[in-house]
Image 1 (cartoon, rainbow, N blue to C red):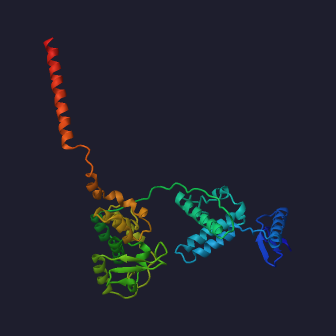
Image 2 (cartoon, rainbow, N blue to C red; image 1 turned 90 degrees about the vertical axis):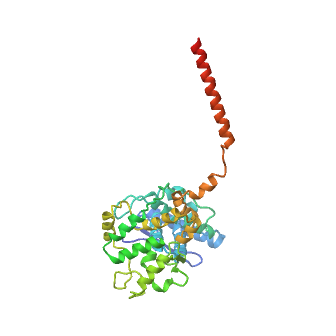
Length: 363
């Protein structure tokens, strides 16, 4: 049958094109007349494509499929699958040629379905980025001449939270679990991300070149990077190597892969150290802040920390302006002669004022 109801009362379309291709899709409606209208439209378009060489129409769903094909080798595939599923349910049936900015704007998610929690502007921007990428891939494929556009939401400024070396020492001493002390110590020594630390294996550490390899499946960018290891980090790893019981560098004592830190131990240590508003990732901010305060150039910090762009490390620039002082003294508005001239003028004004006062007294 060209159209038929499923068990939910939604009309399903099933047609065969003049070229023999079979098209099956949902009409997204329980009204038979509407489903029949969509069926007839799809059938007409299939005939026009086959007989009149009309450019075939593509749907948003097809663009999302291409989007996921591109994302197959990327680290955040699960997130992109979730985004694609959301957009497929929201506007997947729409033709790319008829899609408008309002279709995207009006369907941006506002709350988490399961909990009802309101989504932040930044999370909404991630959903926006996914659908815009899918549409741009469709444009690159020649499926559509142009794509609609909506601007990003304004996001709050990036949060920078760091602690002093004294506070860091207190935090480490207040951790109960030795493996947590090791993980946090290494984070402060290298600025490595949590996922990079917890999955680190001994075969990825190159002691000869003072480097650890972060593979593409772990790196945030999806591309492998080298994690430089300073002298302190090398000594720390050498000590741990003597007690090695598995290929994982960090573990709870039985050599098994860590999937998360012990958040309760971390929370208790923060309370004992009187450190507030601090997360594990802030250990990376702390490491970067210490570097900048000790004169590490931002371009060097970018490479050390594995950031993609210089803009990502500009947020630490305010922590050290000493490198600007040399240049601040390059231009001197007030030379000695200017100061001398100003003093002479001030003295002349004072004498004239005294003279006027004397005249007033004599009268």
